[in-house]
Image 1 (cartoon, rainbow over the protein chains, first blue to last red):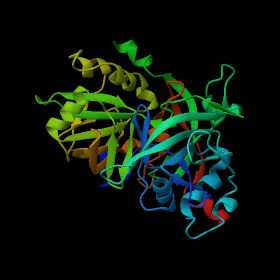
Image 2: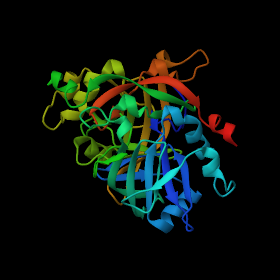
Image 3: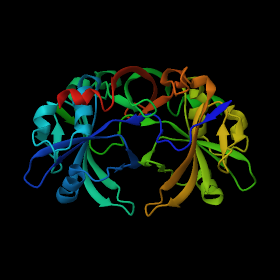
Image 4: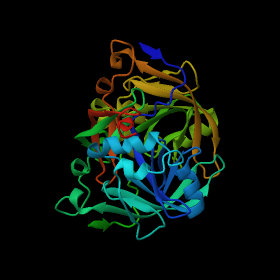
Length: 184
Length: 184
C-alpha cells in the first residue's frame, strides 16, 4: 500500500551546494542551496530565489559551487540560514575562508575540497541561474593514488528533504553503465 | 594545493532518478536520469536529451520520478543504458512492474517505494522538462512509526559522477536549519 503525501519538495536525495560569490566591493559570500543540478554536460542550474548571492552572480557573472562536507556541516548549514544582508560578519562567523578562483571572478571556499568554477550563462525564463562549468578543482587531500576523486575522502553530505537532515555518503553498491548490462 | 580537472560534469552527488512514462499505446517505460533537481517548491527539472521517455512526456503530459534503491541497483542501471526503441522487452527484462498513478497519466514503479507524480508544465527554452509535482507517494514499508519517510528504509542510492559508481546513503550527520544556528 502507498500513502499519498500531497505536494512536497521531496526530490531525493539532494546535494548540498555552497555557492561562492563576490559582491560589488569584492567581499566574498557563500550560501547553501539544495535546489540545483546538472543542466547539460557543462552547465549547472541553481534555483536560488532572491538572495544577496543571486545579486552577486548577476553583477559579477560568475560563481563557484562547492559541496558541503561532514566536517563542515555546521558552517555549511549556517550560510544557508543567515544572509549577508543581515549579518555583515557572516563569512567570519561561518569560519569559511576563501581564495579567488584562477578561472572566474568568484571565491573558492578553502575548507570545501571540491568545487565547480562557473561563468553565468543567463538567468533563464524562470529566473533560474544557468552557469557554464569552466573548471573543476579539487584539493589534493581528497584524491586517490591515481589522482582521481575519492568519494570517501571527499565526505560530501546530502540533504534528506523529508526530514531536513544531512546524511553522509555511504558505501559503494554498484557501477553505473556496468551493472545494468547484466540484464541485456 | 588544488588540482584542476578542466570541464567535468561533477555536480556532487547526484540523485538517481527513474522516470516513468507511458507511450502513445499505453506501454510503460522507465529511464535512469541523473541530471535533474528541484526547480521550485512544487516543480522539478529534468535534463533528458532525446529519449523515448522524452517523447512520451511530450505526448502524455505526465511522468513520475522514482528514486533508485540499493536493492534495485541492477534494474535501475539497466533502464539507463537500454532504450525501449531498441529493446521492446525493456520493462520485462528490467524486472520492474508498474501501476498507473492515481493522479497523472504515468506509471509508478512498484519496486521503487518513493515517487513524485508530475504533470508536464513545459519544455523550457533550453529543452529541459519542467514538471509540477501534484503528489508524492510512498510505500508503507519505508515509513517510520509516525508515518514519515525513513531514509534508512528508503535506501535510495546516489550517483558518484567522478567515478561512475552508485553509493548508499550513509548515517545522519546533522540537522538542517538547526546546526547552523549555533554560529549565530
